[in-house]
Image (cartoon, one colour):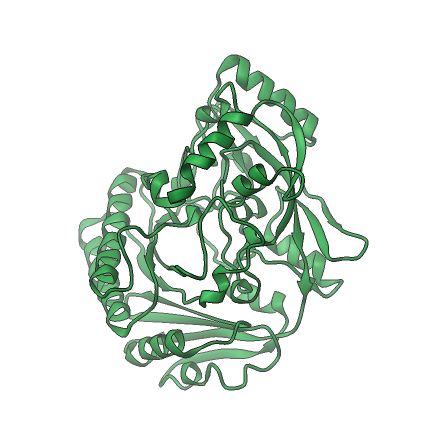
Length: 432
């Protein structure tokens, strides 16, 4: 029970009335039948990295996917079937034996389920798209109790809906993802303390100039400290990260290594008592003025929680530049709209604290902080009020219109066709 209700952030956990760990689609079908007849509130949990409570947590019936752990390569090794109870590090470790990788989470402990059903930012996104763009098929128990395999060919409407539709269309038990060649990577972490001017300028320059689809660099600001993670799919980045590597006074751990070794550098360990939340602000690009504004906001909110909070730990700001090409890999349209014509990057920051009594305050501050950054991006002409938010970086208060935009009405029609008893209304999330 304690494992089932636990989350990466305790702020996302709720005390379920009971938990159940099904091990087959047939058992999930039975559960759907019980939920339908009793109108019991429910939720589904994978690895527990959800940003909000009442999404993969509930005070009703919690369905843990921990027994769905299949990792099965196709005969030609071009795809792999994954159970929704796996974490990405388990997937990457298994596939490395065959020198293969999939587009999945950037942190090993993140679960396959939540990320692959929302959007799915990856170290390989510039090269291959989002996790949702790489799904070939879904095995799902629909809200009407039927179990089916969904592909673009067999059911294009439902396939469209599952690409970013999160938990609105049933309980996915397995997904099939495209595989890609696994190479050694030139990658690592650069840590900066004190003066962040050079690091922030290098971030702005990288975001403006790079065109290498095999490369990704993300910068995290935390008070007076900064961290840059660089990644290149291949053993030599050909000088692409030289400005980062030359930051004065930085501690540099960047070299050719295996992908698994790189992931081990970045996996975030959170103390069991800690609580955290994050949000996002969309931007088309990363002008230096926006990056410096984010820096100042991190300093301001770090100071604020140190004086007004009993349990505040830290505030961060994450700058994540992606190329326009990252948004053009989908083989079909998807529930969460993303295309190279509107390649909105996502700024996201994190608040961390320990006291449950401060949950509401910290969530409100998180929303206020990101709203300020979004307003600044609009002022600078690199965002707009019609920008859409990725579901896995959104607060529970984010409207479905702000996530699904022009796709919302189509999604509602599809949902009605598979959920005549409105079973999905009994669970949380971004309800369409």
